[in-house]
Image (cartoon, rainbow, N blue to C red):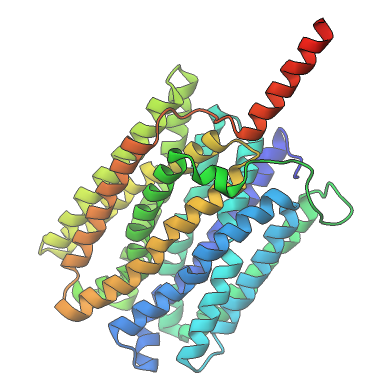
Length: 423
């Protein structure tokens, strides 16, 4: 496993932030290019929704594989392999001439990017204590917002000048440069990748915990709303609100920048609260539940108002609220799971969460195609967020490290040994 302490922690965190940013630039490029891609390939809204969701088919399923891999093998090499695959899939998209080819590359992109959350969660759970974990997670999560922000802003301007293919080729091949500092900076604990000696709970044991279902269902509702915005916001701003491509590039990126700011600020504020005496349960749940409910109310309002400037302002405010949630959601999981289970739990949680990403683009495409409006799509996303808050309230109890069956067995063995020695 990676050895990082002191200043090494923050160098590692900087690499994770940049990787996550690249991750979301790559996956968000299709959303920015969607108006031109759909025109070139004559895609209906339902077909475009299918193309968006293809990424999540493999991404969701392979979360389970990635979670097992990062708990089992050296995370440096697992992450590097996934990064290489997703970068090449992005670049290849710019060369394709068929709808089937686009589907295939989105599928491969999902396999490569599936390593991201389990690997980050494993690293942060091991190297950052509770009172630092909110900020560390918030900073890494900011990459999931900076990426779409850059993709929307720079990508929108780029495709207006050079076409959508240049966007995919540029970001895909340019991403490969990140592998150089990762392979140089992160040390290897073994001469070659191989099984780790540490053990942890099985996936079945994790799935027996209602806390795992609470965080996973909460993530499902986030996935639905988040990927609704990530996939359809550029098209919504252009087709329903009448923004030009260049205006969409600027204004459509604002919600993501706002979410990045509140994710970092929310992580910092929650850590300060805990350092000042607040319990992780009260602090983390307050941020998680408040963020979900505020986002639901503001998102629905944004779809309801007629004025496009007010609508954009409400969407930005909704994104700010969602950042409050995302700054703490993985800190909750890492505390509950502990380092020995963080990879597997994160894989399960993100797999279930990204089923929302599978469903959301397709459902939205069907709604927009059937009604000619985005209003009902916004309403469904808002209801999902309310259900996510309910999952955290009812299924997730105290936020404290769980004792797994293996841990109980080791404690019992130690007790028996001590008892024998005393005799």
